[in-house]
Every structure is written in C-alpha cells, then in structure tokens.
Image (cartoon, rainbow, N blue to C red; front, side):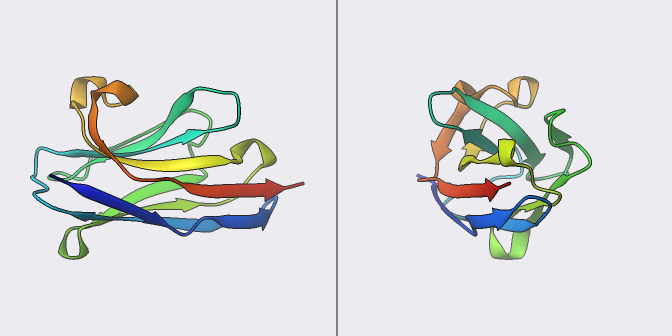
Length: 124
C-alpha cells in the first residue's frame, strides 16, 4: 500500500511561484509513474505533469509547458512540482498520484494511489 502526502499549496499573486511536494511511503518501484493532476471547481481532474520513478522521464500538459517542472528525489521518496509564472487559471486543488501506466500516463483512472490534495489559489 502506497500513501501520498502533498504539501506546498497556498495563495500567490499572478506571476508568482510555488513548489509542491509529494512524499510517498510504501513500496515505490522503478516502474512507477508519479504524476500531478489538478481539479478546479466544477471541472474534471486534469493531467498536469508526470515523471517515471526509474528513468526520470517527464511529460507535461501543454498549458503548463515552460512554466512548471516536475522532479523527484529518490532518497527522500518525494516528487516535486515547481510552478512558475502562475496564472489565475492555474487555481485548483492539486493531487499527487502514483502507479499508473506509462502508455496512459495522462489518464487519471490508470493511477492506483492518490494524495488528499493541496489547494493552489492564484490571484489576479
């Protein structure tokens, strides 16, 4: 059983930065895909970014390319999401996910484990 705990959300002005962290406990293997999704009120949960635990390969949603960066620290069992040049439309609850399938890594239903979410609010 894998448990995920997110932190780092908050309120920031447009153009600012935040760094989210997701600490994983349990049997994380090199085959795991770790991802960040986000969900705004009244909307579906959308893919943001993912990283493969073993190789570190990354993929991003078009809406965040060039602004967000996902990384991992294997020694700390932690995945990070560095968010720069934040926009009001980035406002959402951000969720960390683990497991997944590389071939469908942008699809939320392929992930086995989820954190509780952390709120990110960007004011204009």
